[in-house]
Amino acid sequence: MNTTHTIESNKEKSWSKRRIIPQEISKYLNNGRCFIDADRIEDALKKNNAPEESRVREILQKSLTIETLSLSETACLLNVENEDLIAEMEQTAAEVKRRVYDNRIVTFAPLYLSNYCVNDCLYCGFRRSNTNSKRRALNPDEIEREVQVLAGQIGHKRLIVVYGEHPKSDVNYIASSIQTIANVQVKTKHGTGQIRRCNINAAPMSVEELKLLHQIGIGTFQVFQETYHRDTYEALHPQNTVKGNYLWRLYCMHRAMEAGCDDVGIGVLFGLYDWKFEVMALLQHAVELEDKFGIGPHTISFPRMEPADNTPYTQNTRHPVSDRAFRRLVTAIRLAVPYTGMILTARENAEMRRQMLSLGCTQTDASSRIGIGAYADATEEQQGDKQQFILGDIRSLDAVVRELAESGYITSFCTAGYRCGRTGKKIMDLLRTGCEGHFCKLNAIITFREWLDDFASEQTKQVGEKVIEKEIAEVKEKLPSMYPQLMNFYQQTKTGKRDIYF
Image (cartoon, rainbow, N blue to C red; front, side):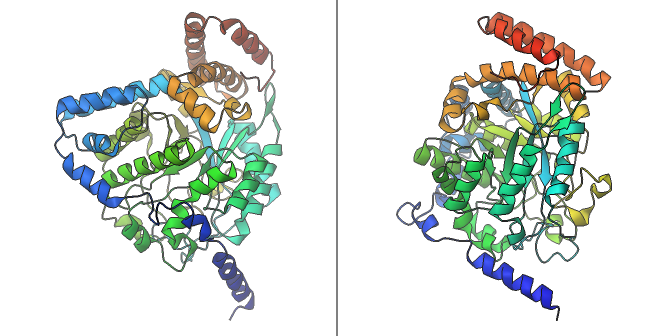
């Protein structure tokens, strides 16, 4: 027997046993019960299985006031089958997004730092029993090289940094890696490239650990429940693993809020269970956070399950989500939780992403590589044994930005709100009233100018200039009091000054 392997295995088991703190579950329960009420969900879906058109239109009007919908209202929307009414719902979803976020699309890149994992999720290429997977955790020098490409060559300002659950990528590794990323500065054509916001996608943590991450200044803390259907969850996540504890994962956002991390992101891996149930459960989660903390989720994600190397489950799901169903669930989420940011990822192919953006999505990734070390080493790209799943869209950021501009969107690289304290309840209140959109519109113009000058191809720059002209004209007309300061910042940016914001 390999002695080194045995020692490492024992360390992992010992570490895993200490991960879950029962009192950091029980104190959040409602009379011993969790907030996901499967019976209420099923009952609401059954009782609203044939919604009248007038009822649906009443619900759409409520969404337009940026109010969270009820379970029964959301069930009505999920059960609509009339194609004309579905089209009306999609148009309303687009209008809700415009009222809250204007025509901005935020871009980011995923950065995978470690694929070691103590869990054994049936659908995941990183699961510990996948002996095909080549394990790796990047050291500081390797992290710096990744960021030099992302911030210095591609032009990203915002990352979602992803970690497996393992002692090699514990909270200290996470904290250290975030600080490494923040310290990297790269010379560009006219200024300096730097990552200004690090969101993280990691395993559930204790309050104490989350306080550490809050202190170092992480962005959104993102954890997906994968599936809210408890029987399915327990069947897919072996009970002898940390992730096998449904409630530890379910209450991770409560612990994050208690620790001060007031921007949280929730999500579902669609394809594990019935999509209508999952949308209803996402709503229950959002409402629970609103009720307990006065703040709903900063973002909601809705990835569909994709093939993964040596992972047969991904090919044989009992709950496939068709493109039509995907459109409907995205529309329903936008209408049910109208204030939240909605993240559309490169799991989807380019054509699907074109279609989905118009339904109210606010964020998308580009130039994405999810192999460990894949930005600095292009040979790592799309190698199944080194990544969690296979991407559907690997276009460059330049190509994505150009397409967005051609469709009338402005790409925003703004991270100002987080550094100005517009987080948590503050940003939620501003989003609900439409006020945050004013700040974001101004900052989007400035950061788009910065990116065009430092990173855009000539073709993309030509298209982008037209978008900027239109945006500036709108500010002059609709926000005349802000126009002089905008032009002051804009001219400074054109001359090479960087990271100016409202």
